[in-house]
Length: 245
Ligand code: NAD
Image (cartoon, rainbow, N blue to C red; front, side, top):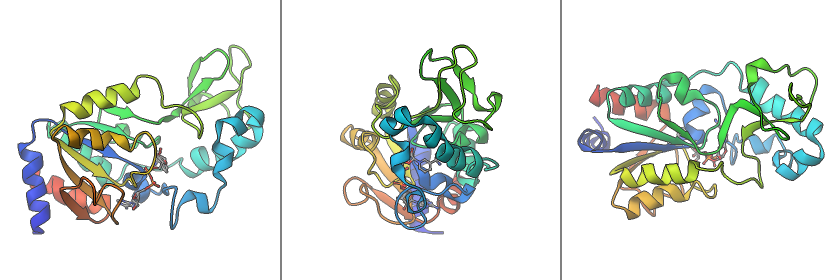
């Protein structure tokens, strides 16, 4: 047994309010690539298509890429062992909530019910005019852009585009959650996306311990990480949960 896994599991066991803060790395082994660096989405696609300015001016073109990445490429993906281990730890009360930068709904599908979606969700489409909301499965995608059934406005995925603010309330709610926490598991995030990246620093300042899981060091590692567990989220979380369940 890796002594670091052993110590980390003890910390989870003893924590009063442990939470997860995660990013794209958690879902990589479900087949959803991360954005930056080797194997990242931005090596294949131009992120400019996902700016709110571009979307507003060219919704049809922007939607071609959105459909390709988020609704064709992502469709058929399933929660992996990391999502499932987190859900089991949540069910047993070891983890109180998940603050995720991911928009893929995989934590909820694995069974975790207290998920704060910092960047919104790809499951929901919202009308840019009347703000009506739809489940993506209820809207045909053959003709782009998809249109609101009520008012003919353009529908936009309910996740944030470059140049858009974080959804109202979620930043404050995440901060409240992090200030309650005495242990944060940071999983699969580079710590470079503003303003989400600030969340764990606030927890650390408030006295929370930090366990980090990543295949490589992140912006957090030299700054706030107490225990660094190097490895794939699936493998490390399986080992960690295995010590506790
Ligand atoms: P990022 O692309 O900046 O960083 C991903 C991190 O995951 C890196 O630190 C990398 O080393 C790590 N990683 C890669 N594979 C891993 C694995 N198997 N196990 C553990 N760690 C692994 O991603 P980010 O920090 O989450 O920020 C990018 C933004 O992109 C976020 O805002 C998020 O909303 C969005 N995004 C979401 C999804 C998704 O919903 N699944 C996918 C890509 C990007």
